[in-house]
Length: 230
Ligand SMILES: [Ca+2]
Ligand SMILES: [Ca+2]
Image (cartoon, rainbow, N blue to C red; front, side):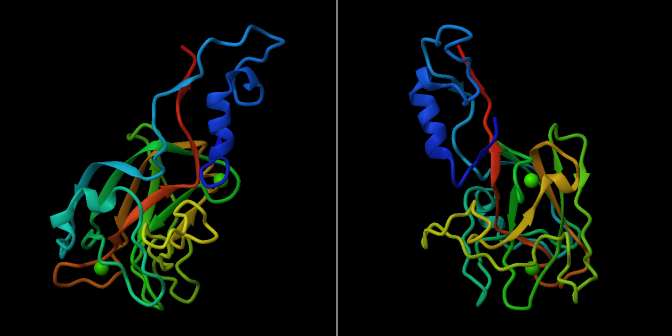
């Protein structure tokens, strides 16, 4: 079952509370079999953000954000718009790499399926290379043109400013308002992704403890929980 996390949760909730009307929600129809006695039980709760850091290999000049690690990259972004970059971030350092797990896995739905939030602002970007995996072993990487400044670093994360934060109420799962950089699984021919890997491109600014890509958060735009009839 695929859903758009910013638009159709109400409909999904209706599917949960109205099992007799489950036709079209993935459950058996009345014509085919009696309605189940209980609604489907979902093994995951609604959380469109990363819920666990699987691994982090800091690169040279990493360090910023370590005091808040790992929570600082879990949960929603804390965007501050195009005027300044958020400090609610973890600096990866030169070619540092982090792997995050999604409780609500991303699926290939219409358009952008996944958003990655850095702390880019105005004309300052620090690029990261994004890869996805369903099993945490086999990875599919989005091609990132980290040297193509004039072209806006196509395929890279860390380019667009972040607007959404819990304070301003802008949805973090609506690509039209959230900010950040969008990724479409269809680009890679991937149907699902439960793990996201971000690696500093090595083409950024390094020094002190805030070297390279600064990760704020990731969010699922098109996601799918695992639900079972019991
Ligand atoms: Ca898609
Ligand atoms: Ca940085």
